[in-house]
Length: 366
Image (cartoon, rainbow, N blue to C red; front, side):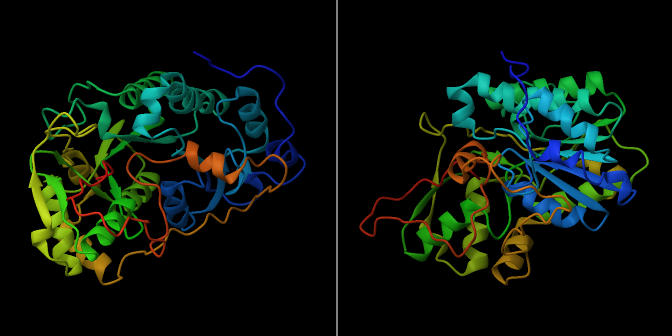
């Protein structure tokens, strides 16, 4: 396992920032947002800007400062330039299949990055984005106090990152566990639009339960946590428990598709990364933060009417350093693919062979 990359840190945006303005020179509230060019990061940046300055960090540098968070030297250089009031850690490798292929990559992206942030900014509050895959998926709805039992490399890396933060930064580290994220730009919803719109049936599991999380619900809770003088160490933010079959039926109904195209199916050997019950209980968020999850039928109806955000907005950080340190867009896209969603713009449509006739099983994204 690699805990830090060897060799000197390259000259990058962080180094150049040392000669410019610092967070404390701008506004009392300065948020360091990691994974700023990812699906979730683009959403969260919009909400965070209502509370102060947002400095985006990503490996590519397309959304703020280019910094490889796996490299402790690079993070240390950034820390000498920035003094954030809060860190929102949304970066990491979230593609379950990629994590299975390379557990070392999962560790580096999800654990080493977290450790480096804690070392570079000791005592600074961290809001860490985690996921329901820390659990086994057999005994939901899970409470924050439920025993973890991940069945994937991704889940194990998340448990390790959570434990690292809670051990080294007790009182300043908050774990936010979410279910499968969705909004108008969600890949899963676009898949359903393509298939059902073309009159093709889709097989959906009646015995795979989970808690899809509306992105706006998550963003609202994040702002509440930032404003709260006392934060829980772990909190679940998720939508109501539902089966994949029920969720897709709600989608078809909201968008006016033929509900008969949604075919019931049962979990089997081919249903990778889907489990009987991976749902999350949000009782703690409800009692401490007044969180009321949006009903899926309501949320999907609003999305269908265009009431929800149709596109993620690009991060507009105060500090941005395009240039040679930015990695290729294609490489970044492959590294940052989200196991729940990757945030394609809704007007881009999946290319599906027109002659496909067999009912399709939806992707594992929801």
